[in-house]
Length: 131
Image (cartoon, rainbow, N blue to C red; front, top):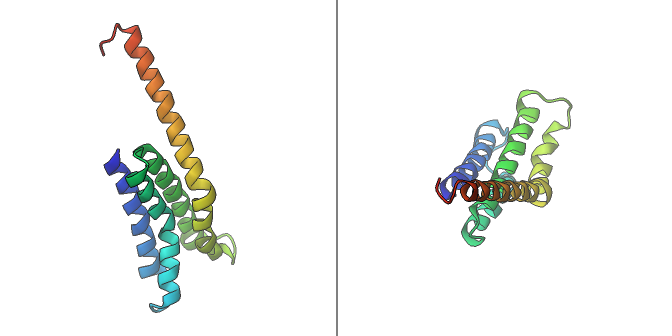
């Protein structure tokens, strides 16, 4: 589970690296570097969870939720923009990933993992302790 969490974090950073290397219409500047770092902040939090929380399921849930919404934002900005303000999603989505979607993803992953462990425990008890 550690490796899978790490894969989702790397995929998120790679998505933002691609966005800023190939989709940005500006030359390298401190603003662009700051924007890239801001976009990668949710994945940094997921890595901190992975290293410090000793529960990789939290990091995996956080990074999956952040990556899913970042992909949605990428599509809504670069592939199918619905309005002229769609690009603002690139600025605000890291905030929402940090304060809402990432934590909710971590919570949902943790709850699902707990339910799965309980179900596994019930099956083990019902089968006489053997799997």
